[in-house]
Length: 288
Image 1 (cartoon, rainbow, N blue to C red):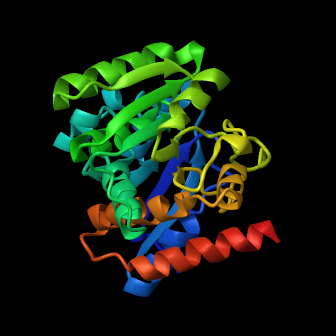
Image 2: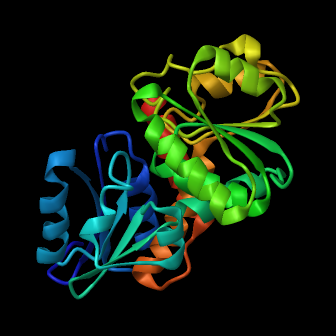
């Protein structure tokens, strides 16, 4: 029952229609007996500053931040957690009496998803598609873990990829390569790759037939992780599965990063298994 004491959390992004976070978090709040409610807010890039002001004015306890705001929101916050500052992207905000703190739970969420699938990235050659906010978190934790990285990004945003590669190379002392996301570069990079990660929105509902990697370039020795979680099995993951590759759904990362955000807002231990179950049920219900 929502009352005058209910604390509000939510997600801001564009789009947000696909998000599983409300189902996941509201189930967790109910299970833990917390007077919280989680709602999605679609925020266009031009309205981001007003939205952040609204978080303060309405005393919203916290929000998740998704595409395309994970980097652009940083100057609008009061302080950053050290990890979020090093990564250069924020996916979680905590509001303490009007003071907004930015965190990044994507990095730990991604690593938890990878390790729980039995994949240790240390020493492996990893190809990452995309250089936006999700990619920043993913590449940071991979570089920190000792993986060898190649970042592929579209020509219009090559500056992002080059800046990210330069920053990671300087921070970790291991050369990170940035290239344009073209068919020839994808094919060449995958030839010796052990892990492929899609950190773009390609394949996200409703564009479920979209993929950046032709099926014939995938191989059994590859681990394929898709940060897109709606649909659960993207075209990329479906093609990879048919090629005999190991596949990891973005749902795993969603659940782990969400659990960490839940704990930041509530200071209570997140019911991770329940959150995964609710997200999965919500997704499979939509796909029927």
